[in-house]
Image 1 (cartoon, rainbow, N blue to C red):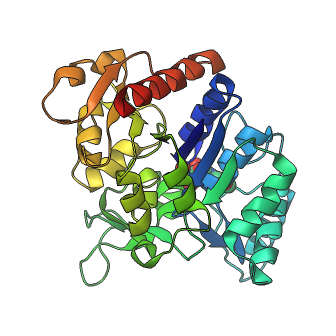
Image 2 (cartoon, helix red, strand yellow):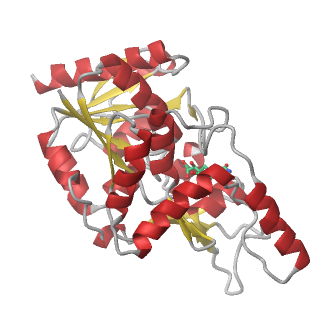
Length: 330
Ligand code: FO1
């Protein structure tokens, strides 16, 4: 069976562990979000690609859900010493571990040599062997930016009164999404070309899965690449709600949904994707009212326990998604 998964970070990576356990012989391609990518200290960091690679490759920090297991922060401490002892003022809010730096150095050195992000990702995966084919959504530049609402917050309106725009990571990590977002845009996505193999993986798939990733800045960012959205719409797509009981299971998807005027409910997220894109939708039993609700019209909704509390629980969710896809494909 060929399965193609559009993936963000932590939620997607954990879902993929269960999917791999449930269908170990399946050919799984993961299309990773690169809107989160950021250049820090001259290094290209791809948080969502690394989270999937480390999680499936056995190198993830389980408690953080990102970055390397048992990492140290000696380089960061040295950077702080330079910040304190000189006029240098590089960002101090993004915690990069020493082992993690090696990943960004390999990636950046390959990019500097003219290799595309997809080639760098393939090289990194030769070491980690994630057991899936991990392809960035595009090799072109994309960055998700957040327009901060002008609300009197120190980071609020700029001199002309309009809200400042910051990189998604600054909003997410430095500001903890504490300043409401008035808008979220994936810069570069409209012009971006799918990376090699992305469209082929979508077209060849028996089913496309949307794991419980952030519908705005993760799956939404991938779908912001026009050719990808168009290819996905032609397929059977089953998604897993990242919202349970009106709140995201982790992360701040609710703050992202608010930025685009979508209520943080399982049904509203399905309706946001729409029946042209999404054919099946798994919701938690707390949200089983969505099964019969009119709003996600044209989308078949099933309710089951959605907390990924163990590998077995996650495998059960993955099985339910595959079964629903089979049912919908007829
Ligand atoms: N998230 C944080 O909340 N704080 C951090 O300092 C942080 C560092 C970091 C370093 C590497 C990496 O791959 C991810 C990192 N993240 C951090 C998570 C990151 O912001 C998220 O994984 C995604 O970008 C959102 O899904």
